[in-house]
Image 1 (cartoon, rainbow, N blue to C red):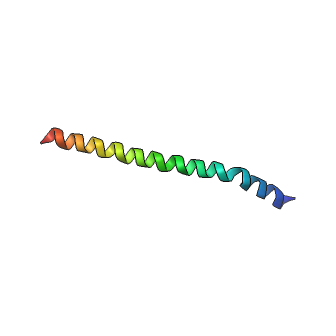
Image 2 (image 1 turned 90 degrees about the vertical axis):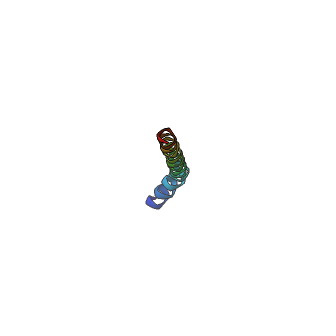
Image 3 (image 1 turned 135 degrees about the vertical axis):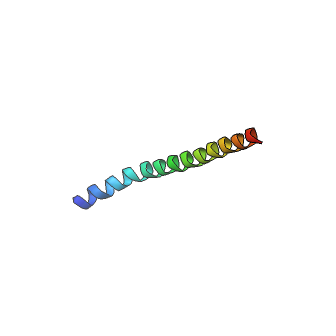
Length: 47
């Protein structure tokens, strides 16, 4: 019974965990891109 509950929980949480990791990956990518743009604009504004 316990094993069935664990399997059901993993089955339900699997896609959710995947979604959260995908979301985090995109947040990091967008954050890095935004940071790069800010640094570039500051560098171009300085020169």
